[in-house]
Amino acid sequence: MDQFEKHIRDNKQVFNDRKADRAKMWANIESQLNTDKPKVIPLWKSPMIRIAASILILLGISGVVALSFYVSPTTKTNYVSQELQDIDMHYKGLVSYQVQLVQKNNQLSDADKEEFLSFMVDLDTEYEQLKLEMQNNLDNEQVLAAIVSNYRKRIELIENLLQQLNESKIKEDDYGYTL
Image (cartoon, rainbow, N blue to C red):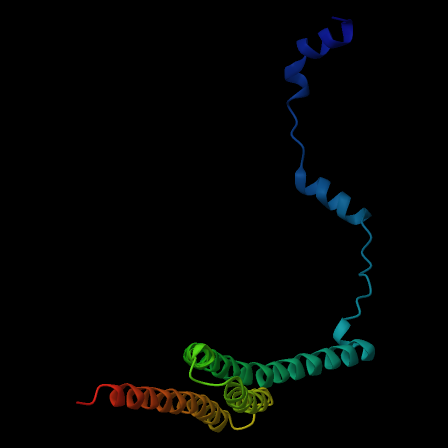
């Protein structure tokens, strides 16, 4: 150790007899600080900020109103489209099965099959028009009823044709076994 450090350690008690006066030190520091308050301009007093805020509020309100108009019809449309899908799935299966029965039937001539299938094509085009009306969101309940009626017409036509074919087949079979 050098002499200076030795002197400080030996006279440690002499140096520690005075404590710093914190209040006096802070008063001295505070007097040297800049006491001018900075000029603050509140944002809401500026006319440009007021105009921009008004525009944002109007856009927000119009967005909420627009969303409320667009959201509510889509939930109805989703419900109706789900109902239409259920109806389609049920009736398409029935119609396609019965059309296959007609096409596989050997008692009908090719011309009769073509004539029958042309009726089915007409009903298909009517069905497609009804689906377009459904998308245009016209009176959905009436359109759904018309779609169901269209499918029922198809099924009724097929059932009537198959029933006539079966009756003619039964009559032919009955005449052969009369005693």
